[in-house]
Image 1 (cartoon, chains in turn brown, blue, orange, green):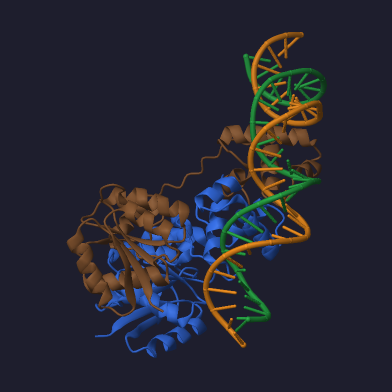
Image 2: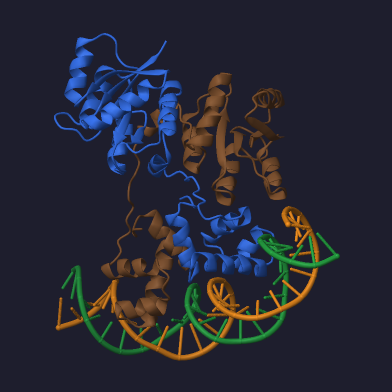
Length: 210
Length: 210
DNA sequence: ATAAAAAAGGGGAAAAAGCCCCTTGTAGTC
DNA sequence: GACTACAAGGGGCTTTTTCCCCTTTTTTAT
């Protein structure tokens, strides 16, 4: 079965030549070519079949690459996306990678390298070339631990399970109403809207183990 | 011209079998096998011809992987190095990558994946597999060992957010009742008791990104 | 010692989640 | 044509969660 690719790029000449290039290579097939991010979104909403890989130009009118990427990440987090750029734009590229795209390509890439990148993304999930290593050199992992009390941490851990609050209360030897108090306090402190939000927070901050 | 590889590993059995594997594959050739980092350094100092790729075991006596890596980076910054580990050791792996190695491999890797990694490093310079995405906080590959339909996957992703089912239904252009159907089906299939359970399942199975 | 703040408990109501059993339409298969 | 699988939608109900505003008790800091 062929892998399919969507191209999002407002430079029609480039997009079309890329399409020709891809279609001359039997393993891949261009599913669609879009002029901007909005067109891609419309397509995703209207069609069930989505491309294996999206080639996404970063600089575009209407809906730029980052915005499009954010939408895709929200709605289809597993969608594989390769960013396309004209030149090195380090900060944007880092942002794209952090938003979840699987690599980026310069538009003057050699065909060989281009197909190699497709294979990388398709197989291992990521294609990161040397320039990106620069981005890796800046460590910015910092745990912004809000100061939770011991009791709160216990509560969070128990809330990250298939327990009702009543059961959590029992385990902590507290009244359900007290648990409700913990919940409210945490929701406010962390700007949460629901218990799912609390679980996601705990996961993101590695407060729970799996 | 063949690409050459040096293997640095104190587990002789593994190093020798790797050597056999590599030499059976015509494109690559094993230049040397070393028992520890010091031996590699001695070789580099004594010989002009250096391998294209160094496979470097992280846990070693005398001079471990990180120390060896630091030396290589200092003296031969362009040397391509792939780290080898027995298990996932996230922090060390990140450190290796930051020190400049081009990726890492688990020792129980499949031969296909192994050669793919060699090609990645040889061509684009980097091979980064799924586990490394942890460090980048990028979305993970979906492991669909349970066969979920496309629609179910969408539902799961949307359910892993602070959305009510009503909002999920809106996003998917479905009636809340249909969503209720998805929920029930999944709960039964996965033996879940609550939405939190579903979120935890998705997290454990890396179906959602953070 | 005393004031402040954190922890614990509560009433009552609305919203959301969860449950069981049911119908319709569509697509594929035999 | 009959059979199966499945996606979509629904009625009616219970339980759980969420919210807002409140009191009492215990700790902590000045």
